[in-house]
Image 1 (cartoon, rainbow, N blue to C red):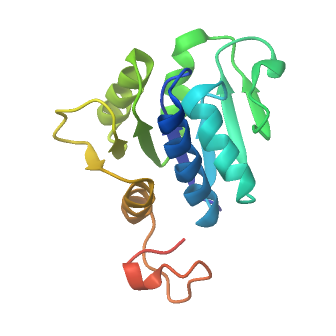
Image 2: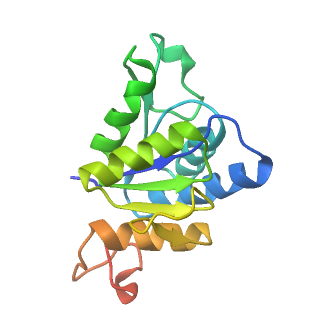
Length: 167
């Protein structure tokens, strides 16, 4: 079974943050993992775009009632109709979460993840949490996320065995 990595962040973001999200999404897909996000714009769209460009699978947990609300890079839209409560579903679905920048919705997802004991990797996100694994680049975010959820395997089709982790 493929591992699922959640990417969380604001629905509206600047171009630099969007580009960071694209790189993180690419990394998720390159390591054979499924990307789950909130399915809308901003960081969510950037991450899904990156994953799709790298041949990955994307799942969007949507807050509303219409699958058409999903950004164009979502393969599997999950229509919840529960608004912000969908943040709990995103967190519960992911094995690890990568928080990229973000506003209060991202903060709520971080809090829920930490409460549930899910690992959180932070890239330019809410500072000051002892439990968040803070990193400075998309590559470090993926390396840390993968290392937190996947044991080292004897054969590595992704070339990452030498780094101590492997899908």
